[in-house]
Image 1: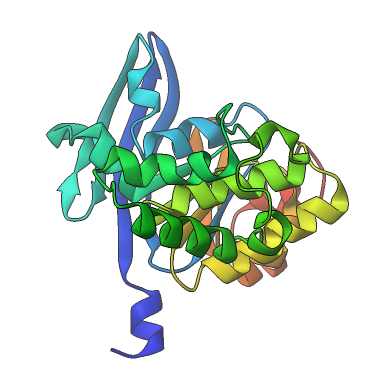
Image 2: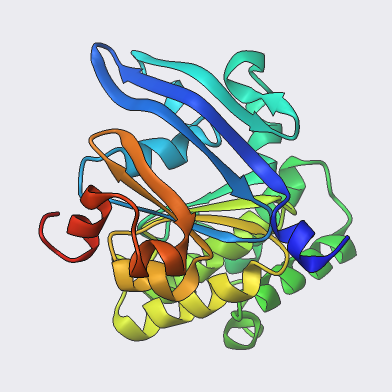
Length: 258
């Protein structure tokens, strides 16, 4: 398979997906693909449905009381809205990183080993190898290798966020979802997360919600612009930012609203 063909392999195929919070129609007829080993950025003004959408991809949104979802979110050839997969198995394959690092109140080692242990790995040597590998992939190993038994809360904000990414990839996911992962970080720490995302896409599919359009332009291959619960435009990031097809997209990226 050529590199071009590989890049266009679909991981999520979203088709006429709708979501309601009780009577509020939050997401309306969302339709677009998310491709393998690419970074897809979701942009749009506050309240447009970005975070709700990304939390639908691992069915986190479906657990909220009053939520109703219809349509198709096809992942691994299965419509997860209709077929209701095992949530532990789904979230093993579709990891989630939030706005602010949320490590467990345990050691650095135990944070990363948590997922493998949940999925039945007990061999101490194997766990040590998985923890080291995950911390290396998140460029954190050299900073923490001599203090793996220290409480994760002792790490800086940027380190905590990278630790949470290490915890997510320790279960060998297919996809990592990022919900504004740098919004609570200083510029240096944010830059490290951006560099990390660019490295991670060699092995994982990335979907990132960001309010920072410069960030979307820097790190994403594809961008989807959301407005009032609808996906207005989706395409190659360079094309969408330089020559948007939709007037509302152009007005948003040029700062006329949002």
